[in-house]
Image (tube, rainbow over all chains, first blue to last red; front, side, top):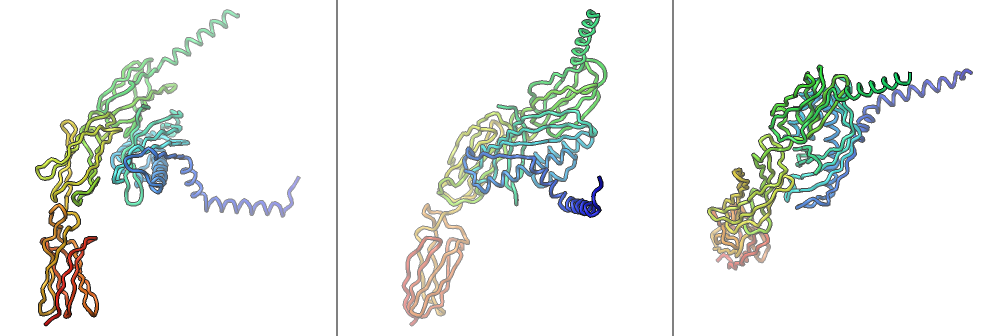
Length: 180
Length: 287
């Protein structure tokens, strides 16, 4: 059975339009996709001695999610650029060391389908530092030269120190701890 | 035939279990940051060993059946580590490196300048870190000491919880430097807060007529605790005469604020600083 010539022409135009759409909005869609794989929930009710304002809560959620998206990207591609902004101090230094080390060894890590349950446990009286505990769940894939050598679903616990910077909250300490 | 197949199955089972044991990896449960570790392996032949942890992603060749030595420098950062040994297949083990003993205190004190006698005006937060900048989560007692001049004001022990201890207290009674020290065993961190006079108290002015108007000045301005109010504090003089009102702002210099007001008629001069009002001064018209 053959399609009429007119139908084939509509089909070609449709494909062309789809191609243009993908070219125009593809990067935006993919960046949204990368970000949306990191799910973060925050419980700030137990934070003390200062209560966490709702605007601060939103800022922490946004910046923590962005930090993990950036970290995952940096460690997957073994590139330092994504670390600029969301990390500072010791956390940034460790991640830099990790990436430089990956570049040397040819290893890379992927954090897939991340979910984070964050709990604010300490918020300084003057609001200049916050300690959070994160129960993170993700699939950790280790690759050597592109070949996956380890793939496992893990539940990790992190102690996190965040401080406010000029326009965002940054992670200064990100330390995995055994389950208490 | 049936016996042969049973033997084959048994041999297969033995071979499979041997293959499974060929590269067993026994990692330690927990390691203190900066300590070296030895990981025993079983099996024989060459394999690739991977170590992934905070700040480290390395691989190297190992001989199965021999011990793998992880140096102290590889395990300086607290966190989770994944050890992998791969030959035909990969075997893994995870372990945690925990912080060593406290070696430094990060101490944040607010504010840097505070009026005297204010409730809950001075606060401090301290985090305990080991020599590798890992947050030490083991509880420890930090003592906060506040001293004004040679006079101790507050000494308060606080137990760290999740690596953090904090305090909040009132500022002292006298203007001057407030030393704030956090101490943990032989570690200490010192910060300074400048205590300044609070709002003026009993603001009083004197004045006299001069050829071009009225010269008014305050008596030395003190707060209610007797501290001289800081230079630069603004005092507002208001002059009301029959034909209107004028206002002059003057900063305190060496404890006194002065202003010259151009007023020819009978004038009432009042004074204020912040929310504090002073006395009124009645000055007659220019003769």
